[in-house]
Length: 132
Image 1 (cartoon, rainbow, N blue to C red):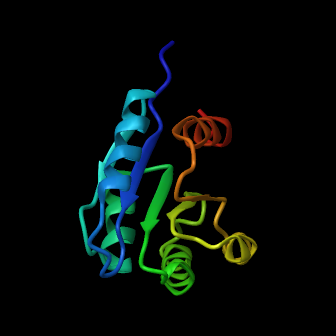
Image 2: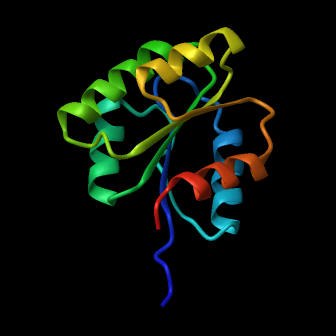
Image 3: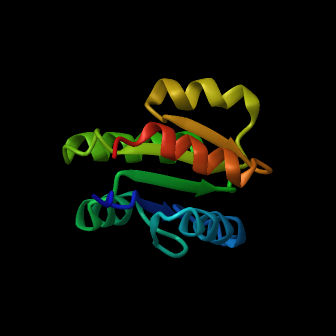
């Protein structure tokens, strides 16, 4: 019996206008057999949460280069909890200082992939942590 592909939402929250990394990660996930929904630039927390709900994804990946990763992620996780979406795994990638990784995980982020992370590591982490 064929397994359903893992569904991943890649989101660019806030005012950050750089999305090359998000698009390349999306391509790597697609090449690994995942279904990927990309939100486009400058998404609000409400837009991301609504898309995650509508698309019935298992993973929400935030790409944040602006330095606002802590407040945006905290707000998103609170909104997801309010909407009953806490079973969705949240990952964050981008310019995240090492000192903030533990803070992100304490908020509820499953894993952080700083700029320069290997695509193979991202794919492997998702495949190992999403029940299929």
